[in-house]
Image (cartoon, rainbow, N blue to C red; front, side):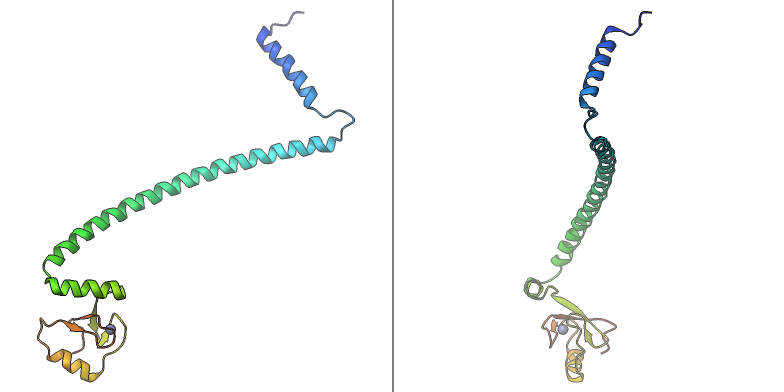
Amino acid sequence: MRSRTPRTSRTFSTSWRRWSAASRPSKTRSSRSWSNFENAQRDLGAVTSELSEIGGLITEAEGTRDKAFGEIDAQLAELTAERELTAKAVPDDLLALYGKLRSQYGVGAAALRQRRCEGCRLELNAADLREIAAEPADAVLRCPECSRILVRTSESGL
Ligand SMILES: [Zn+2]
């Protein structure tokens, strides 16, 4: 009986059989090496699948990161604009002092809260607190301990 398999398919099938026979271990070879090869192929498949999964996770994480960067950039632009508006209301010499202290200490001004400078966290002594309390409301005060600009608040404890 004649086969109905198309010629190209037969050719492929023949080639496959030849290749497969050549690739298969001979009877003299150890079946162990063939088993190792099959195990290695199976491991390769698992690793390739895992790698693909990890690639998906990386892509997802990059998307989350890029979204967060976008939000941070938007916040930064908003805060920069807000800072520029606030700085316009501050006299130039005070702004220069603040800039110098900020570059020196990281924080140029700190609130005085409960008799404590929030810049250096030290509690001011009674004599310093009396001097600060006696200064006019618009006076620029400096922390006697860390030299930062000291901002009085309703919670200063004066
Ligand atoms: Zn201080």
